[in-house]
Length: 499
RNA sequence: GGUACCUUGGCCGAGUGGCUAGGCACCGGUCUGCAAAACCGAUUACGGCGGUUCGAAUCCGCCAGGUACCUCCA
Image (cartoon, rainbow, N blue to C red; front, side, top):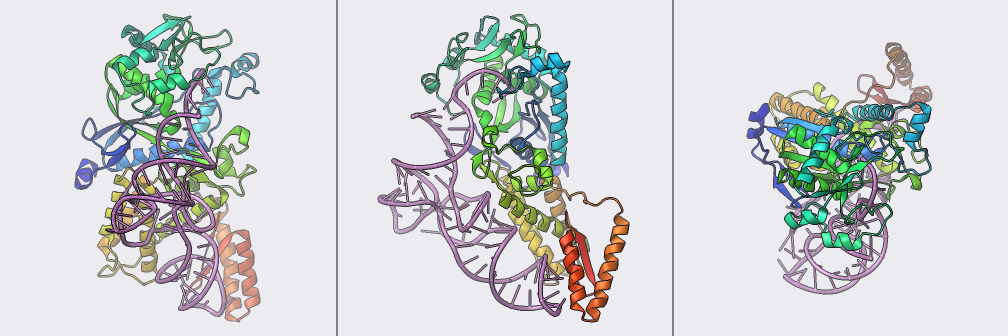
């Protein structure tokens, strides 16, 4: 394993870079090491379906890079500053005001939703990042970024707030190179909005905001008591932990502009060069063909998927079904959620995991009628092509058919090939795709349950021996209705409890 | 309104110029007392119109629909 393993793989890993809009060969800055930064959640509510897409996308990236033998430092921030005044929902109480009255600390709210987020991510089997920095923990670093922007002449103060001077910056650098925007278009197409008078230009963005009286999250700075602008947060923390130049920066496509564009600008304005070599953006999610929004009534929390408690959901969907469903689509495509699609994914996942279990029981032959090396090559080829998990999964299903055929005695496999096939499936299904077997629903009294079911099925065998099909079918039918799956075999029966 | 991207069979979703994606559903067959599971096989396709090409789902243009951003906050 390790680096030797990587160098053995003759293919290169290609990554689609938003900067160039092409797939580029991935070359890390320091051989053997990868710095990966991903924009994390804003902790002002429980995680919804939309949060899972970037988390799972970059978990796949993280896992695959590790699998290739890289030592990955994965930084994913927690945004816990700046939003605690008036929220997106006008109708709701302003959290800061409420916080004061109810004796709730804003940090307590942030902590609650941070814990909730981590809990949901763990259920989705998303590996924790190496570093999970908070914005509130890096105020000094952000003030330092603001100071450098001012010192280099790319910012100005206005009534205690500091703004990034986009037009000045655009004279020296290409503002819009990441998102494909043109500054002229931005200036002509921007509508006039209230509260913009502090800015010289509508394209400028705040890097330090003076706090209004009701804003209780505030820090002293040379300019005012206030808080850092959101765009400053990520560039301060990414470069702190990954260096002035690092390999990969990820996030949702919705963040490309202005957030990531502003990061590029601040990087150039403070360091004189860009920090990020590869920008990766995951696409968005729709539900029944519509975008997700609170006003549309299709806003579904992750926990509601897990419990099935939402009016649009016909049933509960386990975290692994959500994960598998997402991995069956390319991360750069929009993905549409529906009950029908999720139920299909649930069955597909079951088929895949069942085949993995069969691997341990396969009989070996002196020769193989299956080509494991070719299968393995196709799986890596897929992943090396910009993390094409749907293609990798399609290849794994070819492997599933092999496994089932061998199990049926219609194909055979040598001991060496079986070892290779088992390793391939363990690597891809568990390590790279990050799937896992579901916890068994019935955990208590399992032994007694086993005995009772076996007893019933043995009675059924007797009935069958007597050709008493009525009794035999009644037992099977009722057990099936309870959620058991009954399979007759040559020697007797097999059963399992579904869900 | 502007910019970018997308539109594949009953459903989801790969695929960038000629070659079976895959999963789920459905149908036929093998197996089974009958089923289930598994295996084998069949069927259903590239939004609309026009163009380039010997040949297009794949390139170009127009139209329709969708998504994201274009504003504060994150």
